[in-house]
Image 1 (spheres, rainbow, N blue to C red):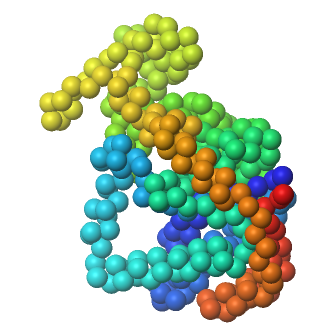
Image 2 (cartoon, rainbow, N blue to C red):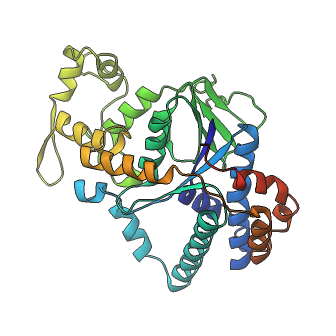
Image 3 (cartoon, one colour):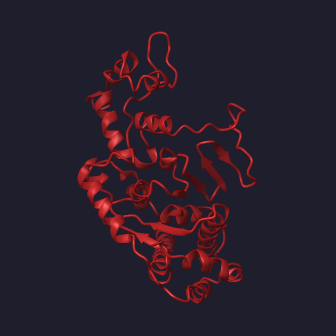
Length: 328
């Protein structure tokens, strides 16, 4: 089976931010809904998928594990003006409408757990179906760690496909790195290691070793040298991991301790055992065959609400992807 696994919140809210600036709210809403569904449909067609899996966000267990996790996002919400907050709520209401439609009016698998992020659910689904092919629909770079021979990632905003062989544009040509002038390299293990070392500012995950260089000098080990020594745990690895540094509050940190913390937060195979159990149970409960009928008619009604005329014209194509049930 070829699965299309959708990070729905990422896809919808990324679409929101490229909606026509200056347009009225209703036009912005319609554009965001249109782009979200069109991105899913394009990936469905291009990847010859057979079933859609929708993954939703819960309140993350990571917030209990690491107090600063995503705290920066609350500050951003608190800084909204009254008009911005009103528009923000309108988009959240629309997002809830999309979730309800996909859950109740389609045969897509829809997964959510109150303690799990969509990232956990997506990684868990891939791990639970190792012999199948998976395309992850999201712009989140965290998923690059999952790329393999049978896992790729489609970014509906840039219209690019990330694979272990390289990054492809909408024409199927390799994307060229602006710095190296060569095709972009994709190394999932390196991407994961570098993010665990450097942290993730978007999620407010602090660096394990601030200021560390990618390539070392004569007197100091860099990330590349430590990464190359990661499996053997030799001199270069231990030299870096046993380094200590002091933050602006005067607190001393050992690199290995902060790196290990970041692995738990960032590595989508390294969740605590109790979280893995909840993840496995959520996937098992979601792996059932839905039998919603007349999906095309229900889709047309949904399109009518948001005046999605172009999507209505392709109702049969959407009925196929939204109506395809989880295989027995």
